[in-house]
Length: 555
Image (cartoon, rainbow, N blue to C red; front, side, top):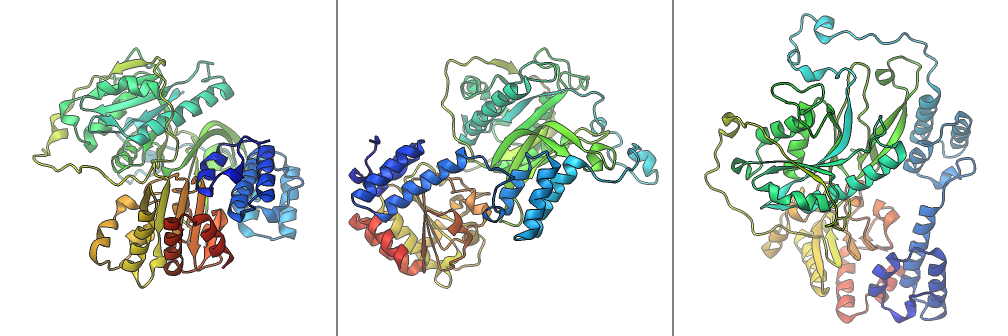
């Protein structure tokens, strides 16, 4: 007998309860109880979706027997990434050619074959020529920038997390990143046995601002092994140049690059961080680009997923010789929606001959990771960074400013109702219908897709106050995980999906039977939001939402 009898609960109560059940057999028993009791279609769908998700997580795909027609191109890309047997890869390629023969799928398999096997080009090893010698007729602005070439035998360690603050407090994404960094480095130390000398690597939190020393214990509680902070009254608000210079001074302290400007320190003996992580907030985006540029490395911006893994590469620009394949280890894989809006791209920042791309840097969309539980028993090292700040960094003086009381926080609500471009020729009415549905729930928030915010719609009356970037959900907006997410008139581009696909139950309303959002919705209502939303509002107000969903789905 399962702990939860679904026949004793309303569907609104079942969503969060079922999410916590991790035993597929127990879920099947619950399904049998429901089928033998009230036999509600929405409840059965909810349980079946949870079973399917658990089986997907537990089951490993066998590349030699999997039906490729059941896999998307993204699935195939993830599958072949871990295959090092050329015969298995070639078999996959033949089966794809005999089946759907998708160009992009074949490309993923062929790229992996080349990475494992190498090309047939027996070219000569690449020879390094300094830019000033290769192009003596050009003016090279980097000639005097000592960091542009790799550090000879450079040593890199640790994952650095820039912890942004507002009004003297850590913002949520700072705690999210610390929790993720703690998880990654724990797995890293277990997988690789620590650094190249076998010493465990750490999570280093960076705090810059006014009175940030008061936050050092908090960041340790959320996962940092070491905290490096710099506080100054002039840093009360974010400023590009001093924040960049301070972070880079911290990153370069110690190691081979130490000089008069970047002195030796007793808390750091390596050259630069191995990884850097920033929040993809307005200030975080600015700082991440400036810091990574100053450190002569790359940046994957607006990421929603991070993991550390080895990577097999055959590109001669990275291996140093055409035809060679080389396995790079300890690579931070940074996932972000690609520019097509339909797939994820995984960005790698890999060294090449004569050039080190460290730190490997990423900025993270707020809400992508969970805030960890604080551990007040954790111990960590706290370092106060010392550096003279140049007066010219503060030439612009802020004489007056306004502080908003609060922004729009769409997280933490039971229900989120989001409206997209399906509002069509009656945008004001469409927004009003969405707001009516929000009001019908006890705890709901109102959100928008990017298409509404960037459109040229003319909104009238009171609805104008609900149209703003602070209500945007998705890659460049907020990430929400409500019990119920209702998407009305939203097509489901990947940029929007990353902001809501962790919701317990997703209800989509769209006139297009083939809209992308259908593929990751629990309930899909094919219809006009102007017809469906009033019925849902009436159903919520009368306490009959589950029945209304079943009826609307049948219609």
